Amino acid sequence: MNADDTAPTSGLYPALFRHVLTRTDPEQAHHMTVRALHTAHAMPGGPAALRALFGTPAPGTESRTWQALGLTHPSPLGLAAGFDKDGEVALALLDLGYGHVEVGTVTAKPQPGNPRPRSFRLVSDRALINRMGFNNRGARALAQRLARTRSTERGQRAVIGVNIGKSKVTPLADAAEDYRFSANLVAPYASYLAINVSSPNTPGLRDLQSVQMLAPILQAVREEAEASERRLGRAVPVLVKIAPDLHDDDVDAVARLAVDEGLAGVIATNTTIARPQTLRTPREKVEQIGAGGLSGPILAERSMEVLRLLRQVLPEDATVISAGGVETAAQVRERLAAGADLVQGYTAMIYHGPAWPGRIAHELRGDA
Image (cartoon, helix red, strand yellow):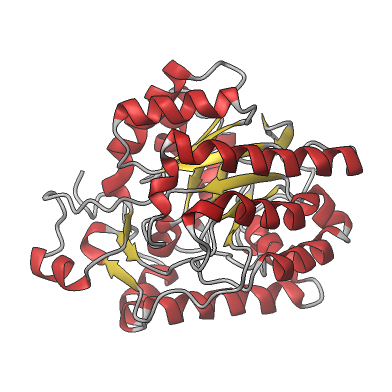
């Protein structure tokens, strides 16, 4: 597939992207988008206006729904973690047409992340490289914000997962307690919890994907989820998010560990540290950008490989959320047919615009 095969060539957003956004720092453009969504959603009639603008059915009126994690999803396509790190616009994003939104990554302690610039577009590949470093306001602030979101009728029905990572200052030896702290705070407001041990942008984090180091982290988060369930009478499924760069044997081992530890399933995959030769962006530019996680269509093949491997290892009732390189409704259907229960995207919205999730949802419901 050429890099332009699925890119829109007409309409307002492509023109905005070409003439404005490509001339704006990616992180600045991201903050502008979040502010615009927050403002639009906060206006009287804002949520209904967003749904009307992007053709999204009102909650509870969808012609077709999907079941996963014991929850009802108006679309199998959700938004991966990283866009709404602090849970500021989760409901607005759902009004764009996503079936679920995963907020975070959140850490136990607030942290500024890595030095800027730390987000880069590879336009000819419709890809991103980021080394944000889990910049967020911390688990306590996210819990407070989600509590306000859940205080409304709309918020109570919304499927909002929370992605948890390790604080940069916490030694790897203390990682389990760091994850436990965050899980304790956010579990009461999370539709599910995702344990992020696969970001390439926190030093040493991916070492936690080894079975020996991962087991106590899974145990700690699961215990907090179960404690929340006992208090609230509502299950909080726990999943682990893995990297595409894991060897197949390690994918197998992590999947089996997740089952042994009583997790609901696996999210596959995160961004990659690889820089494939098939990238169309000039090699000099890629090398100049440097370290970070690469996302976009380049991930699709490996993400599908990991999905198929997981389905060979995991029991039928385990949930797999497939992420990485998805851009079209046909690709979402392919992931579902290969055994994914849900699918996530992120980078595609940067290149295809805010109407992208609603358009995919329409096609999947068969009403496009």
